[in-house]
Image (cartoon, rainbow, N blue to C red; front, side, top):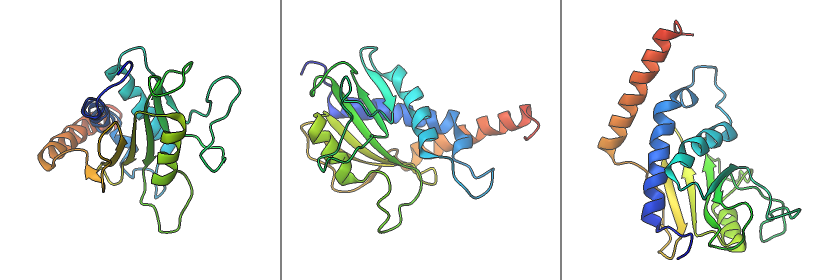
Length: 190
């Protein structure tokens, strides 16, 4: 497939980026500034920063991207204006050869009936409409990342699965906490 990647390759690259996000941006995950969590956009922008170097330079990585070429705004199948949280694509192309990955991310538990933001259904709708090769619904809640994959010519996941095995996650969290302590020491704990 021209411009394509197998799901396992995309998963590996995204897993590397999520690991870097947790280790390097640990302060986004911990409640050190009150009860309110950090915005989803902050997480997405940092994930994009860590994902881009794992991909060939022929791909663009954008957060909240809303264009479908020129002046056309992206809309979901029900014609609602819709921005995916993060996309890996080529800004000047259309179709599956130019649309590699679309990500919907949640950084807090979604309450039943809360329809704000994207859903699995809206993610799948954007995937079909704009012909993304792969789609992933990513939950980054309480430092236990989970994902659910769609497309890529493979069977869609039936349920959310952990991004990391238990032992790997323990290593990642230990590294994140170590670097966090070093940063706290350097800044005087502020």
